[in-house]
Each structure stands twice: as C-alpha cells, then as structure tokens.
Length: 71
Image (cartoon, rainbow, N blue to C red):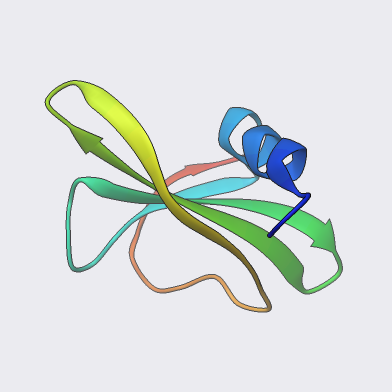
C-alpha cells in the first residue's frame, strides 16, 4: 500500500461499507469501492476510546462479519 496513504484515509473517512470483525468486536473493516468488484479495505481497532489502523489491503470480496453501516 506504499504511496496509497491518501486512499486509505479516504476509505476511513468516507467508506461505502463498514463491518465488524467476526473474531474481535473491537475491530472494524472499512470498505471503499475502487472499481467494479475491487475494494480497498482499511482495518481499524477501537481500544480505550481511541482508534488505530491495523492494516489496509485491496480485495475482491467483502469479508463476512456484522454489517454496521452501508452507504
């Protein structure tokens, strides 16, 4: 994701969908559609009232989990 920091920030600010992780209820997956059937996923965790980015990656599928928000 080198050089795609702005894309990751935009995904966190203006996602198309947010899901909660099945494995950790404090982890959220933010998805933003980049082109048909291709999303950018930013994975963030909320801990002690603060949030931080865990990772970000391009994907062709939205992972299973509790859907929190949809655009």
